[in-house]
Length: 588
Image (tube, rainbow, N blue to C red; front, side, top):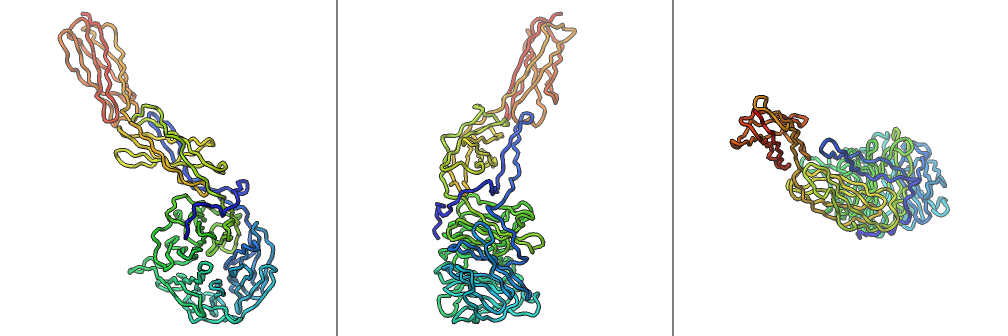
């Protein structure tokens, strides 16, 4: 697979009047409290909508196919009864343009590689339609199916499944066969297994077919398999079961897709999330980041050139149900995230509910909601080309003399090519000091590119700040910029108020205040008091500073004339020491 850096396949800019992108982000806020800085991380902003959303007039769903030649989307319901089935036809703007009615229940759709023929599964046959006229072009008898026929087009022919049971609840554990269209009929291949087997085509021109076994089949260790379908009969090439020796980690298959170059297979596993496999179904060397907490994988689809992948999920509330990101798991660019909520959107991407247009200009997502019998079609236009970004110049900081426990602002500017971003960009920052690396959250980039990272360094010494921009789907990441700050001790101070004169009998009464900036002291400061008179210097009893920073010094002088009182604090690891003195003329 060629992991392209350019997004030239995406030709439409975001229309923010129609759709607000939900980019998961945290906002860095700061508030001064007392002598320290509190950094608060706000919750992520939740919003998602599509360029167009259509409520689908169906109460069940079995699959969709995208016709990039005629710019149509075909959506099939799935009727497990003898009622009439429906295939809906929509254009790329989300407008319904037709219906392909059937007198029998339908399930599954597949499109030929040249988009000339649409195939629809019925209970006793596979029906072909001319996609130019939407008229029936053929009907091919097939083994009777009562569980929902799966369809896939691969190796120049149509593949389907069939299973026959008396009651719908038996479908989960029914014996299901793999069939292929040859000579005007759909014949069994001899391959079969238990459960509603899923099919997915391989890459165009690669003559591959994927088959997977759902967890509901009751198999202790469901399988995934790849077939070579270039010949008259399918030949299994690779297969895999995922449970370990203790039976844990078994496949819970919801969807699967092969990359356009045939080199990778992505699997939506309800238990494990998105698995990325090699063509031989071994684990790929890199894996995608986990879906958001609480999200269960339901669907997966590669873009037409394999540059991007869409990952669908079922997630509660405002947790993202859809992630669109680079198909290269090593690319750290944050995904474009969508959260579908409520009666206007559905609340989850349906299993097998994602498909791209061939040029990547549209992503189609079928969502479900309510009791699971309501469905919506979302037409999503990802943003256009990616643009370069860079940090302009060096970072600066203020105040110039940084001290431990005091607010510090690190400032910089981010530049970007192309049009202004639809939503404010975010930069993230870390501080490295003697105790390790500390995450500082994210800061919003203003319209002029400037940003401010707020921090409160807690150690004396060097603190190195690194600011990153990881990019998004319209902007490439920028090279990190760093800035080292020398953090000093916070100052402390003592102020004394003493009388000009006192008497030996009346004594000396001095009041004072002690202040220490930066981080609060773990305990109240204890001050040393020394007295100097014509008889020499001696140390008096120490005094403890009150909670409000005040203290008093009381003394009975031992001699007349000038007496000097010196009050001092030695400081600590984060604060400088302080000294103050006062001279009193003592009379008899």
